[in-house]
Amino acid sequence: APEHVRLKALPKAEIHLHLEGCFEASLIAQWARAECVALSRPQEDLFKFSGLADFLGFLDLACGLARTQDRLVELSYGLSQRLAANGTGYADVIFNPTHWHAWHGRLGPMLEAIDAGFTAAEQDGLPGVGLCVSLLRTQTADQAIELVDTLVALRHPRVVALSVDGNEAAAGRTGPRFAEAFRKAGAAGLRRTVHAGESSGPEGVWDAVELLGADRIDHGVRAIEDPVLVQLLAEKQIPLGVCLTSNLVLGVYPSIDLHPIERLRQAGVPVSLNTDDPALLGASLVGEYALCRQTFGWTDAVTATVARTSIAASFANAELKASLL
Ligand code: ADE
Ligand code: ZN
Image (cartoon, rainbow, N blue to C red; front, side):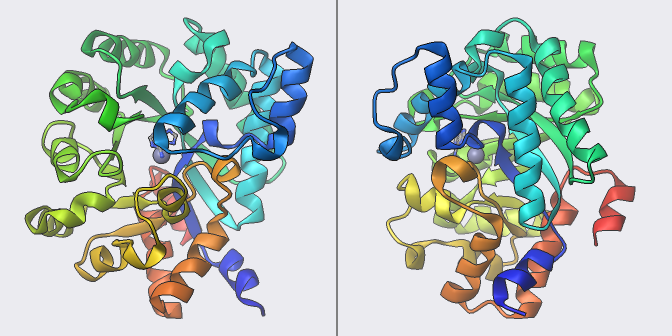
C-alpha cells in the first residue's frame, strides 16, 4: 500500500492539538460574513502568519466569531473528523477559554457545547477526545487559581488535564506564577501539560518539570540546548508533544534539517508527533510522520515506536489505551 495509507493505518494518538487551531479558512470567512465582521486580509492570505505573536492574535479573532453553541459543536465535530481522516485513535485536545470572547465567564456552558460536538462524533464512530483546559501565559496567578477552582467545581468528565499555552517570550518566566494553580490541579486529580521550550529556551522546560509537575511537555524541543535537561527528560521519561510543521511555520527553526527531534529521540527522550494547529498551520498527522521518515530516515520500527509513545503518553484511560495499541 502507498506510504500515506500505511501511516494512516498506524495505531497512534495525538497529544498536542488545539481546538483553536481547527478553523477552516472557509468557515472563518462564512462566520465573519454572518457577523458583519471585516477580516483584515483576503481569505487566501488569512493563514499567513509572521510568528507566534501574530498567530495568537489571530486566534482571538477566529474564536471570537464562534459565539453560538451550534458553532462550537460544528468545530469540535470537525476536529473529530480530522482525527479519523488521519487514522488517529484518540486525542488530548487543548482548549484555551481566554481566546473565546463571547463565552467569557461561562465556562460551564462552553464545556457543554464542546462536549456535545465530541459526544455526537463518538456516537457516529469517530475517535475519542479528552480536553486539556488551558491557561494563557500572560494571565495572573489569581486568574490561574480561579480557573482551577472552576474546573474542580464543575468536574466535567470530558476534562482530563490543566494546560498552559501562549507566548512565553511576552510573559517572561511564569513557572513560579502558576505553581500553586498546577499544584491544586494535580491534587484534584487532573493531569498536567505545559507549553515550554518553544517561545522559551530550556529554562521554561526546567520550570515545567520542577515547578509545575508537568506529566508532559508541549513542544519542549529547545531542551536540546541543555544536555543536563535532555538527560533528565530521558531518565524521567517525560514525553514531548513535538510539532514539526508548526515549528517551521512559526519560525522556531528555519529548516527541518536543523530541527532537534531526531537528536532528542536518539538521546532517549520519549518524542511524539503532533499537528498543534492543523487547519491554521497546514499540518496533517500523517504528513508529520511522512516528513520524519523522509528527513531522518525513520524505519518502520522507529515509526511504530514513536506512534506507540503517543498512545502511552496520552491521557486516555488504561482501557482505551489498551484498545488502541
Ligand atoms: N496556542 C495555540 N498554538 C500555540 C502554540 N504553538 N504555542 C503557544 N500557544 C499556542
Ligand atoms: Zn501548542
